Length: 129
Image 1 (cartoon, helix red, strand yellow):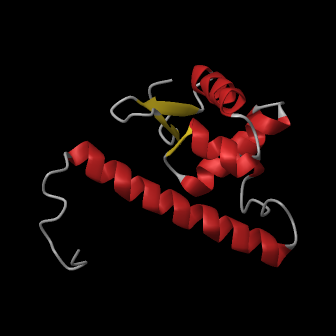
Image 2 (cartoon, rainbow, N blue to C red; image 1 turned 90 degrees about the vertical axis):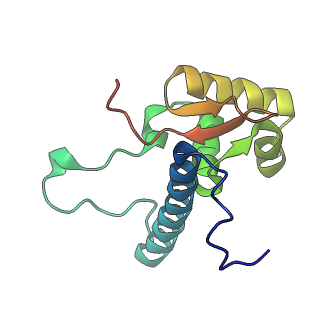
């Protein structure tokens, strides 16, 4: 495949193009956060400015450590299915699927039903809440 082919994404809808761009940005931001945390020596960089406007980490919203690991995995991996999460975290597939369903029910991630098997992605837009 030619990487300079400008027509290779013409068959994708606008939503799919935006999802791909969002995935790439999420991976880049996740890797940047990991590098920043390694440099600072802390798990989260200190917020700058008003402490009331500090960015909320999604892992702070869940009490289950396994769900927090899944959130961190989704942050780095972007779009993934339950089997891939299970392999990455050393779980069985049904446990990973159950945890992903709980995260979807809580509104922290969403399932993309257009693919088979179903793929999950962290939500980035909460204006409808």
